[in-house]
Length: 313
Image (tube, rainbow, N blue to C red; front, side, top):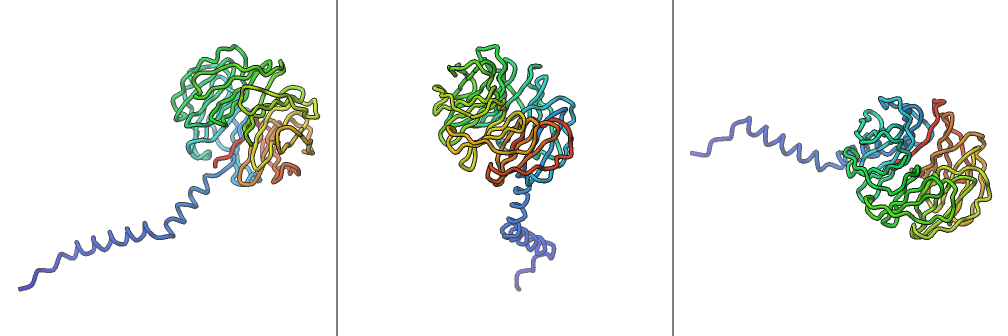
């Protein structure tokens, strides 16, 4: 007498399991997953009061709900997380930049102006303040050793660099312990970036300084007396922006060329992503450029001041 046939229910169960395994290994499943990830790549701009805009291409922008009315000054992306900072110690985080922004406890009421991500660490700076976080949620106050206002911060060559009032420059290898460096100037410094083996900081009266190591700084001729506020590096080009629509570019951080933006408004933040430079500023101003030379005005849909911009990559 032969073995009895297994119950029909078990046969169906086995078939469903096999089909599920085949689905997971299907190229179509991978394509859908990739498309979801690609949708997360976007520009995020922040500003007054609690303004957050997003764009997948830098051209069309959509306003998002931040849930607050505090001014936002800086924004960055790292470890699959957007982090924006602002007045009264405001810190918000979002995993998607679109649907949900969560307020975090910073432990300070001081203004926070700049934020960056590097070596597994978020670092934000402001009025006498430096905070760090490994996850964007829990923040720890660090000792800067100064009482100056810090405006910009970046990470490069295994080093955090922050800049601020009266030519202030601080560096840190771990984000915890900070050392003051001699900039050789007393002018305010507002923005700082790293690229091509060089730190570049910009500031008042067209000030531009460069350094290969964050310690020794050299003043460069910008060719302008306009205030420079934001600076970035990508695609073989440094780009800095500032008052009266000023835009300067440089392939090496030493020789700078003025570009035409076509606006009298202050430009404050600048970033690069998806083959595009994007700069933002007063009265909802947004410009984009594929090469840093020719710039196109975009419609932001707001007249609020935009102060920071980043791209998720």
